[in-house]
Picture 1 (cartoon, one colour):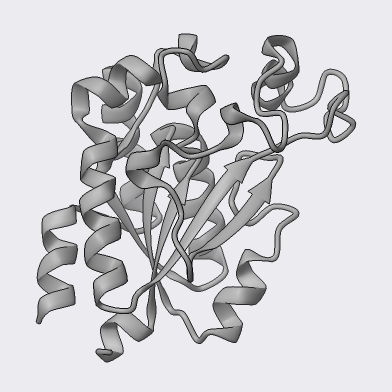
Picture 2 (cartoon, rainbow, N blue to C red):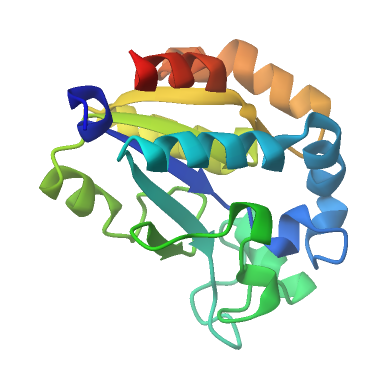
Length: 202
């Protein structure tokens, strides 16, 4: 394994059936349509294959709430509270699973979160530090929510952040493009799957 692969991790966030499948309880947000238009899942699948072949650590960050949503307080973090309104992201259901095209494999690490950041209330940072990871490649839905907050938090913790633009999508084209152009460059590198393939094969 190259030093690049050893020090890097791929993090796939919130690419779950409730968001990226037309039957998903949260798919009406617009995310499903954008994921389809951009071919996001197919691009993530290609990145996952390349990362695993080179020994790069793969993480999944998946939303998952208990029945009754005890993790969610009234009138706090409305985007997460909307899960309760739609009865979506219930733990251990089809909606919280990843589609077959990008499903986790042996050796991948799946972390359940109940927030918009992959780091909030999870042990992601602990695992990354234990594995001496320095560089994070981010993919997921939505660009201006979980990708944004994870990039911000990760950069503050000292990680080198790379956002795989072609492996992200949002609720609309405008949301994605505004985030990519104006926000994420302040917290890391707006990158591409092609550049990651080149780095893995260098």
